Every structure is written in C-alpha cells, then in structure tokens.
Length: 401
Image (tube, rainbow, N blue to C red; front, side, top):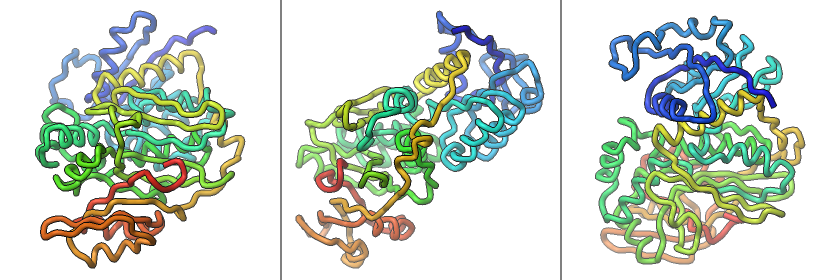
C-alpha cells in the first residue's frame, strides 16, 4: 500500500506536542513534515525556532497544502472548533482530546462519513496502549463480555505512592505534580472524570454505543484516607481506580468508574505508578491483558505518531460494533458489592444497602461492606461530593466486574 505524503498542521506544543515532536524526529521508518504549529502564547520561550510557530489557527486551517491536522490542546471547546472546521475543509485529523471526543462522539463519527475524512484518536483512551485499534480490528466480530482497567496514570501514581510509602493523599498528589504526572488543577484526574471520558470512547468501539458521559456514574479518589489504604493492605489488596463496561444481557451494557480492591493474583495488582492496564474478557479470545505507560509526553506522543502513520496509509475506524447494532441499551440497574468508609450514620443510610456482609465502627473509623444498586450511587452522585465518605468496589459481586 502506498503511503500518502503528509503535511501536518499541529495545534499545541505542550507536554504531548513536544513528546510527539521528539518521537517523530527519532523515528527511523517514518517521516512527516510538520508545516506549522499553532500556539496561544507568543511570549513563551520554545525549544525550537519561532519560525515553526503561528498564533493564528487559520494559517493551518486555510492552508490547502496541509492534509493532516494534529490537535493536542487542553481546551475541549477550542479543540472541537478546530477539529470540526478541519473536517469540513476535507482535512484528516488526529487528536488526543478525550473530553472533546466523549462529549461529541456520535456527531464526530457522523462528520467523518459526511465529509469523507478520517478522525483517529488512539492517544485519547489508553495513552501508549493501542486499545482502540485492537477493539476495531481484533475484536470486530468477537463477543466481548467486559472491559475494565486502569486508564489514568495520575491517580495510579498517587495510589501507588500511598500504598508503598504509607503517605497521605495530599503528599502523594504533590509528588505526582513534581514528577509531571499531575496538573496544577488535578480535578479531572482525581475525581474520575478523565477515566470516565476515556471509558465512553472505548465503549463506542467495544459495543457500538455512544454514551452521554453525564449518564455514566464516576467516583474518584480525592477523599481516600490512610484508613482505606490500611484496610486494603491488611486484606492483601491494592486500591486502583478501575473503569468498567460490560454486558448485563445480550443487548444491554452497564458502565461505571470506581476505586476497586485488587488482590495479588489479579493482572492489575502489579500495574503501578504511571502505568495503565486494560483487561478484556471475550467468548472466544477469553481474557487478555494490555499494559503500558499512561502518562507522560513521550508515551502519549507515541500513540499520536501511530495514528499519524496509520493515516498516511488511509486508515479509518470502521465502527464495526456500531454498524452491527447488537448492543442497543444501557442500564444502571446493576448490583455491586462496595466498601463504604464513613463518619456519620446518616451518611451511611443514604446508600440504602440491600445486604450487609461486614461492619466495623470505632471512634475514628467506620466502614460497611454490602450490596448496593448502581442506580442508587448515580442518584447520589452530586451529594456524595460533599460527604466524608470513600467508596470502593470490592469486585466480589456483579457480572464479570
């Protein structure tokens, strides 16, 4: 197959943009010409000559010689404008913006067909793990039971430090910042938003449903305490933030993002620091495990480079599970066993446990383990944010969770 010669217009030159620049320059087997890089701040010092940059997006979008736009900025609103404008002008696009994709997923998929262009975004879901391409090509006709994993390198780094070093959350967060694995505002990471956006993108390829992120329950790690870590260690577990999507029946799926207890015999137990890991369970391929770096410019840049290379061969996602239409419904009527650490009895009562299997109460630490409906958690999603509680999926009940 003949490769198309690519002339790239790139938006953003932050951590991922610089990482892409590095891996592209180091690549022996593939070369592409970055014609221009659009950035916001004309006064910021750059490590390459300023002649490479522009501050006007139209210098890229209106340049007919540029046939691929690579979008690597943080702002999802601006990213959506850039991506859709480029597609309307007949330019193929590679992006890593999971917020923009998750919020406009179906619209962007439809625009690819309308304007006969390609939109690739491997880096938006698993960083260096090629999970989307595998779902598209390897699992295209596979009966996929479930997918779960660690999709956020920042929270995994924090949880690893807390487990290994017995330090508080805030200390671990500051260390993650110092290493470049956490933003100055880490809200998207520590509250579970980032993992949820990635899960929604993956769900589109795994099951062919384009979910509204607001319909998916997510819960992060910002209220985790030393008591939770100590409980996990005493039981032989690690706590990981684990998104899950899986079938509840032939044509229905459920999904959520929750911290989870991981025992030492499980694949995810040894996925530590900034690494990600994804587990798929299917009818024929059985259980498979993917792991790779989930944070850092070079790790994400390598996934972007893979998409750029694929684009040069004319590759497009076919959304085969969407075309097949075998999964049509989404439900939150799904029972989970959870650990709930709390301080006030009235807070515990909000969760309406259907069964309780374990209970402990002292002056400084209270917890309960029992069965709860996912819909109950979803109904409490806003109230939970103001409570002194921490929730962990035990993984012992539910369908393949």
